[in-house]
Length: 191
Image (cartoon, rainbow, N blue to C red):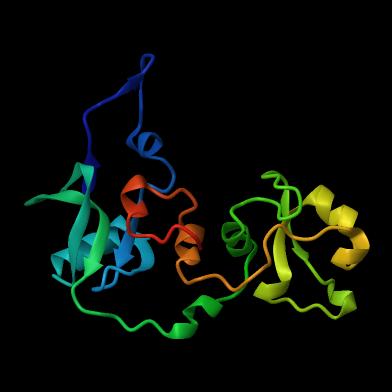
């Protein structure tokens, strides 16, 4: 299946479909049968699930997908037809830099800067701090250097929000940092 859209131009050059839709345009939000967001998948995977009647289209894109024999609206949000049990510890996934940044709103937890982000152990590992969700925050490089190998009270630097284990929905923000407007009504506001 390929996407077809009316031609558009910028100046005299045609605007490609990929550039117009953006980098994450090939992503589809997957909802459980209860409308709980559980995953993000490719358009191709979403179409297969819909064609096999394992999912239904909840939100459609503005363009259509065409095959040799059929036409279908491009899925943006799908809902599984049967409930899938998600283990309660799904939010205890591997800690990654992107997951920490997403949990902390892509901002330094010391000064609020959104550039040059790194991760910081609130209690340094050399002082007994662990590498777990409750001890890691997003920090810009200058704040991270300024805090160094000191405890928050020694450096006079405390995170704006206490670090915590994120809800499972945060991994949807990791899979697609730019959240399409059609997804927002299905995602909790605070992760």
